[in-house]
Length: 188
Length: 275
Image 1 (cartoon, rainbow over the protein chains, first blue to last red):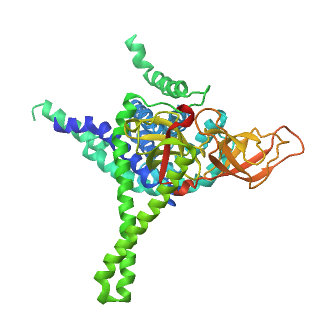
Image 2: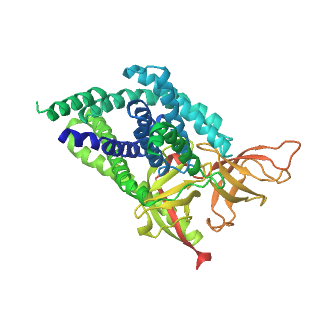
Image 3: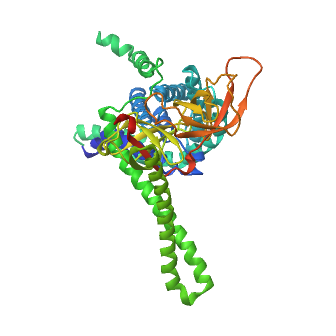
C-alpha cells in the first residue's frame, strides 16, 4: 500500500521539484555572468516526461510545466505551451525511431531538444511578429544554453532515475511492485 | 461510444495536446497573461525561494569580500589581525551603507524632482527566458502596487508593472520585446516609440526620416499613455541609420538605466497629474 502511495505521489513531488528548480534558475542565474549560462529546468523536465512517462501523463505534465514557465516570464500567452509541446511531441516521435537507453544518449537528446526548442521558440515569436530582432540573440545563446542543459542534465537525469526508482515509477521497479502485488493477491 | 473512445484514445489525446497550446496563444494582442488562482499558488512557492536564494547570495558575496580583506590584513600584520578585522568589517559595512545611501539619496532627489509618490523595492529575480527581460520585485499589492504603474530609478525609466501578487510584482522592462514607451528627443523634440531589442539596446521606432536625430541625443518619456511621468530619461541615441528612401529611420538607443546592475527600483504609485 505504502509503495502504491509513493507511486501516486511521484507526479506531485516531480511538480514541486520543477517549481523549486525554476525558482533557483530565475534567482541564482539572474546574476552576471551566470545569466549567460542559464539552463532551462523545464526543458529538462519535459525531456524526462517525453522519454520516461506514458503519453497522457507526460503530455499533461508538459502542459503544467509550460504553465509554470509562463507565469515566470513576460512572453506572450501560450508561447511556452506551444514550444514545450512541440519538443515533447518531437521527442516522443523520435523515441519511436531511436533507442535512448542510457544517460549519455539522454544527454545527446537533451542537446538536440535544446536546439529544437530555441528554434521553435524564435519561429513562433517570428510568426507573432515579435521576434524579428531575435535571431542573432538566439544564435548567440544557442550553444552555451544547450551545453549548460547537457551538463546539468547529467546530474538531473541521474537524480530523476533515482527518484523514479524510489517512487516505483521506473520500469523495473514498477514490474517488481506489480509482481509483488500479484503474489500478495494469490496469497503467497 | 466507449469502445470507440478507447480505440482512438491516442489520436484524441494528441488532438487535445495540440489544441490546448494553439487555443492558449493570443495571436491578436500578443499580451502577456495575468495571474490565475493556481498561478498565485505556484508563486507562493517560488517567490519565497527566490527571495531566500537572493538573500543567501548577498550574504555569500558579502562574506567572501570580508574574507579577502581579512586575508590581506593577516598577511600584512598578524599582531593587528583582530583589530583590523573589526575595522575592515566596519569599513566594508559602512561603505556598503554609504553606497546604499548614495543610491537612495539619488532616488529621493529624483522622486522630489518629479513630485512622485513612490514605493522603493528590491529586485529579487529575472525572467525565466533569455529572450524576454522581465524582473520581479519584492513589493506587491500590499504596498499599493497595481498593474501598469511606472517603474523608474534615479537614472531613468525601468519599465511598467505587468502583474502583481500580494508581496511581489513582475516588471516588464524597456529592454523587453513587448515593451513600448512613447519618447521624445530632448533636443529636437522628435517623437517615436522605444521598443526592446537585446540585453542592452532598444530601438526607436516610427521616427520619421526627416526628424533631426543624432548619436548622443537624449530621449525622455513624453508622458503620453498615462503610465510614465513626462521628462524621465529613457536613454541616449547610440546609432542612427538613415536610408536615402523610406518613411522612417533606424535608431538604436542605449538605455539610461544599467540593467545589469539594477538592485533597487521605485514604483510610481501616484504622480502630480493624478492629484
